[in-house]
Image (cartoon, rainbow, N blue to C red):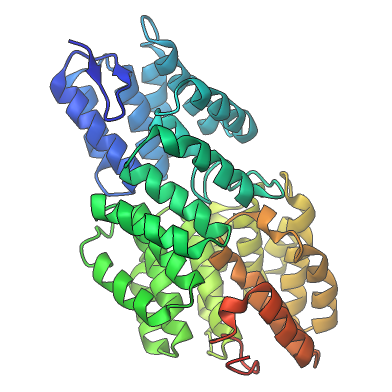
Length: 429
């Protein structure tokens, strides 16, 4: 009997046990829950010849940051190409492109693949989410591009918790907050343990300015979420951010030390770096004293995991950490070697952080002004890029341009006007 996955795609295994473990692994990838590696390991233990089980294991290892193990799993899948369907062969090739760093080629291949296999969720997920291949493409208008991608796929999935949550995020990032929230709640009703759904609901609540509701919801949801899961640290960042906005700095530091900072968070290095550097600087902007040692710690972490440039979102946060820690050599390296499709923005942002650290506010303004019109190309969500919005507001305040700062926050990020977390900017603007 032909086995199929949860989306009715045929699988090259005769084992029902392997099939069940594979489906559990795929759901773990789609829902960002802990245990995906173990699920795929069970699948290939039961059926060592199950090629997609090995591909899934490779993907699970990528999501846990173990690239060496991912390469081993994908090489094993390569040895099993004989007799595979076109769809399954594409999995091996696509994840090979991803693992070898050929992001643009992989993105194009995913787009082509879903035209023939729109319900192939393991492939489609590579281009969903703000941290996917579209989100990190460096393209102008990538938020609209992401919305178009999920909008085209949505009719093929029906009432599927994963696709509904992905499309809800696309709606959220294009300003359609009410529609996003409604669809997100429907997705979470279908699968309450979907961490991506919970994450995206946190984004919708942030964009709606519902700070207390967001804190209460996320704190309750995190109780049942494994600290080893890929999104635990990042969801904790959201919680710490809300604690900062309410002025509860004691809770903010506790969350950072328990779940966000290096040595506490168990997520991917890019999340540990970006979340930690971001919350530290946003705390400083709000008038909180941030010990120098915290900046030195995250600067060292960035130097360890992101010693070379090329991932723009990581690069701008590494530059921030180095600038605030006073690590001139590492900062200079980011500026001098910036590469990738968004290097034209990474360089001025990095220079801007240097100027901010030296309190040269006019130079900081000159560096960051050209970036503000297109910083979505750097990647990340609107909530994450508020780091740049708030830094820019602070520069204007330091230069005495208070009225301009107020106009700017009202026009660019009105959600921040009720509780603008920058010292010196009046509340209720």
